[in-house]
Length: 283
Image (tube, rainbow, N blue to C red; front, side, top):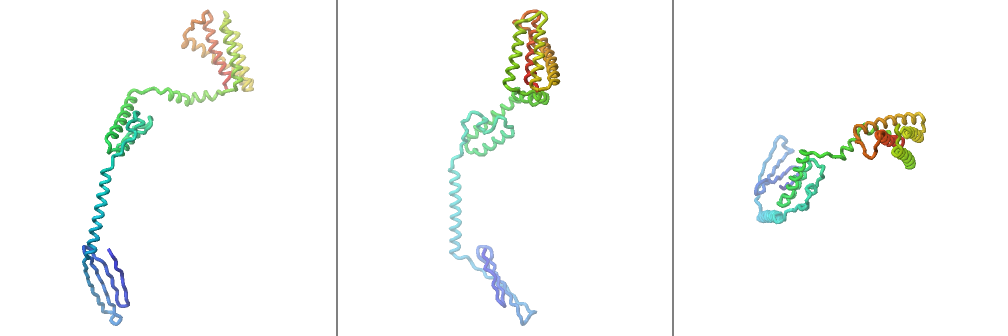
């Protein structure tokens, strides 16, 4: 479409508009306003039609031919291009083949499968490998839901993060290595004396020494006599009761320790362990 423009003169205005169709149509509108005769308005519309020349026809034919050749070349190159091959087609692990983690959800698995199938749709072995990996993962997920496994690490982590365990662990702290060695030697010696020299009355003396040692070590760490006395007495009572319960309900009789006081000896050994923990790590 060509706009020839608007030409103006003091007495004439001319507008030429090209027409549509195989030819070009020029429309000229003219008006001659007259200063002498203001009430008289004279106008006419002259239509001029010109037809395309031979050179324009040849130019259009040549352009159509070039466009057709370009389209044919483009389709020909796309048809001769080889299809893309899936690079992980020989990977045995189905998760690695699809490029997902083992904790991926079913929506993520389906999304990975659809994306890879669309990308390598022109190569049938690649599509088969993708579908095979997807089916294996889905079957494995179904089997795991039907036969759930107990995740020990997850259970231990949940127990550690529980409020009760957090409250208990907050009451303990790790002292210096020298202090740990000192308390360990004392309670090991008490345990050896209790096993080697049992009496008819039981290990009464060793148990009393263990109570005094607990109070002394707690006072050495906390620097408070009242707290050392309360913590030591409470730890001793709790340790003796727990040791008795374990010997009665949980731990079976040990044939190595025989005699009338074997029950008291084993209870004392359990008490020494709990008192060592209290005197060493209790905050």
